[in-house]
Length: 301
Length: 301
Image 1 (cartoon, each protein chain N blue to C red):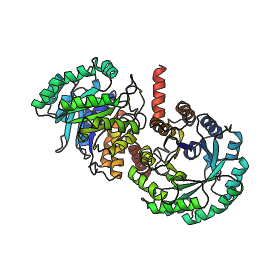
Image 2 (image 1 turned 135 degrees about the vertical axis):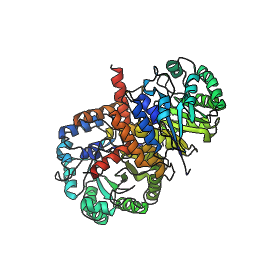
Image 3 (image 1 turned 90 degrees about the horizontal axis):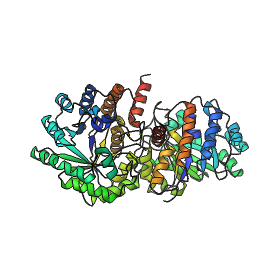
Image 4 (image 1 turned 180 degrees about the horizontal axis):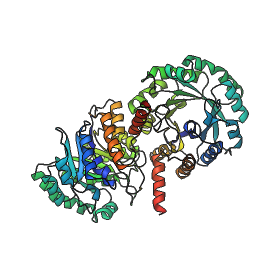
């Protein structure tokens, strides 16, 4: 592999877990990320503000961000109403999400996995009519907070269904960050029997510090698309205070160190993370950002 | 691989970077670690307290820890005076350290790498006479704060010299945590041409969040011995505020998740780290510890 594609999910998967984030801060973050060289930014979620108040006013966000040529700005659209709003806002791509765990699906969206996939049919159709690409997420691919281990065959099945429904890319989410490298590899191998590996993305959370190692274990299988969040934004709703998404800085550092081009300017990325973290009054959980900021502090005296 | 050996370096490499740590706290930490199932604990350093005040009174530490059967308690001994004190204190093993970087050696111990290795000859001889095993550290194996990249041939040469001098194990230290997986693997492959891989240990710091991924990249080469520090104790003296050693909790989580036995009780380990971090008024940088403590907090209320 000589090139990787990074899907920056900080403004959506990261900030949806950050209470008190403002629309202004979200717009600033997307704009800062646009200047880093990232080519794909999941900028928000068209979901009821009653469910996720942090993601409210996605239409206003899309109207106000400075879109940079060559960058794809996408959003999560859990239903037809969300999709219609997203299309009206001029998104470049949308995403739907299924779970690999029945319990997770029932407890989070009050329906079975099959029912949730069924509900995406009209979303897929409308997106197709609008010529907007749809990404599919599968959650709990390496474990569920309610069920524990999830059979890889189940993950493969849900991934295949989403792919057959028309998703151009399937993002495999270790939602609670419990996976370890051998399991991650086995899961990806199982999914790759049903979905072309070029259509797979890894979306690993760093709750137990395993995200980068898990991703590395899957690199040699041929996956080239990775989701991450600047500064390691986000958290784990099942362990408040634990870390969130894999930090984009740490991912870029590893890939570039291995000779894999990401197109991302690490310095600009650290600054983007620093800005949003300052606004949220927290420290980046990205180790690269921590080291970068510590060194800068020393240099400046 | 079905079993791994973990060398816990928290009481030494971790605490030597923690200003204000007391002898009492150091003893408590070693005793707590003894109850976790760890089989090897680097408990201190017999070095002048003018150099490293945090490591003062190693003789008193060794006199007061509760030694558990089956656990090896070792110490760093940079010179003959240190070795004699260590032997008098009844250590089970000692360690010496060389650098793979000339600049690092000159700036840290005021002599060339060759001179430093020469100075270890009497230490090696006296340890041999006392039938105490000597471990050799090589620092800066994946980069130097002054020179940048270090040729792998240079690392291999220093490792081989220490091995030929009689060190039973060579611990390869990414002192400033700058390495990435492909480089780590290339370095270990180069060293393994000169030193049996069964005599190699990996000692990776997590400054840039790469430690676990780097270690994973070397696992398949056959390395089975790993250094780490409970709670991710320590820091980077070249970037104050950055993270320190690879956290033992995160390493154990990964290895056990891959079916590799460590013999370590993760719950006892998290508690040992929690205790010392409480004493130092800091939070563990171990992601596993953070998640563990966050979950406990939720469960309790």
